[in-house]
Image 1: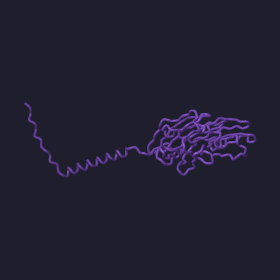
Image 2: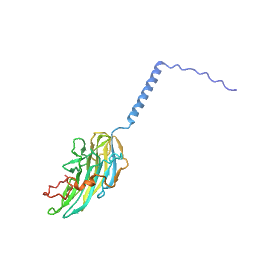
Image 3: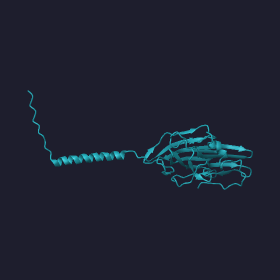
Length: 255
């Protein structure tokens, strides 16, 4: 014989209790919305790519700063080359796209230290720039030019500043390199980065923003394209040794 179920009583909740429940539900809902807002990713970030890549000799080395498959800049390291009584070697940087620019002036690329601001008020050039050069001719006994040559001592952990376009909008970035000299230059790329917010300056050496990302390196080294830095290296301002008949200029050195 089954026991009869106990009678169920309907609870009469007070109006004040209903109000408290409603307020609690509203507060919980608002809190969850706030948490979601805080958890949403920030738009601003620096995209950094670590690297350890030697710039090859006599070959255009293209750099795609933002990994979109479009080359932004090109580095060129030309080996010791001699003609008659003159010899030269050097490292240069130039734009791989029309409108892109590098930090520097007077045909020389800047060798920025970590912490320097790279932004709209800096000096930029759309023409190929000389990073480091050594040349000799009768009467000179060898001479260095370029801030990256540093009088033959080279530099370590210095930065190129970049101003380039993504979808028609200006962005800033940097590339970190070591440059040394021993009867020719060795240039080693150790990392590069760019700021994702258009027009926002970046600090040389900064690898993190509100969000951090380290995508796979997107670099290529292949046969030079028409009118790239490799084809123009010895003819670009500050790079030709065959027309050096003027007195030796004062050597440019880094501080």
